[in-house]
Image (cartoon, rainbow over all chains, first blue to last red; front, side, top):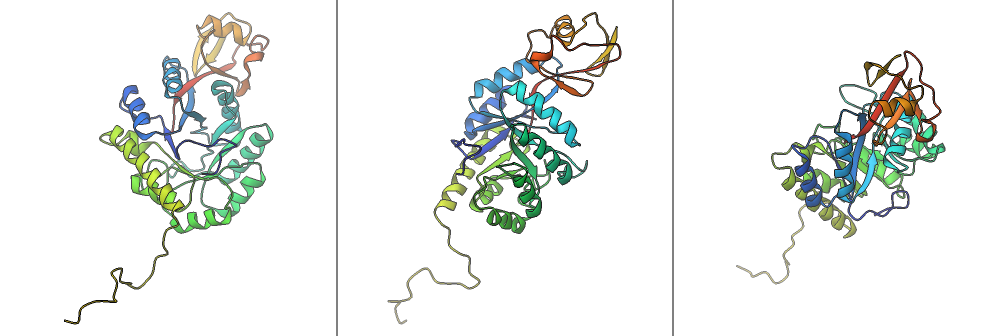
Length: 253
Length: 65
């Protein structure tokens, strides 16, 4: 696995902390999935923030704060600065949302915020599309990791543009990349790992499953399987059948 | 004086960000602060003045994806 700003993760799974039925289920899901990173956010203090922070600390995983819900570069930059102080990390999952229905990244605001934050010492994980031109600009702006979407946040559609993601992976072979958002099933996560991505980030698929802990475990196994398969150099698909049982020595009947 | 704290109007006495936070029971809490849309680092809380009509955002760690 490529390193994320010098950090080698123990497992290629990043898990969100939202929408679980209870804090106990959240904790069990993290244990079951063996996720190595937890994403968190900043919201107005309404009495539950301090207890939540204790839960996150007890998980013993890397913390990746997000700028979820920000619709402008300025809003995202301010949120990132607050997050850095709060969570004591330079990591920031940079979301600048451009559209309310698709929650699609705003490429222009994302680039602007990446430039500002990278210059300010942040280690930016930009939530982006599979667009190669934008990816190149984000890297030039100082991002050393990319987080292309699989599909719109919370949609569970999997890898919506598999071709585009494959091309992105091939275009920047040395850049650590995380498939972030839109995964619904462990097979989607395995697929992402088989395509050569370094990790996946998901939340809803686990938190909203009927049995979040079992689903967390399934995703943990899927990313392991996918990474193992990628390392094992998969065969090339072929159009025609090729017998696997030896033809030589078949009886004349 | 009246200021807005997390979107609600509050009547406070403190003259600085640190003073207002202590007054509202957040003196020791793990929170991050913005005043009128700009981040106020922890080290600046004691000197940053709060005036009538200011908007104070007091943010805490929260669930996120």
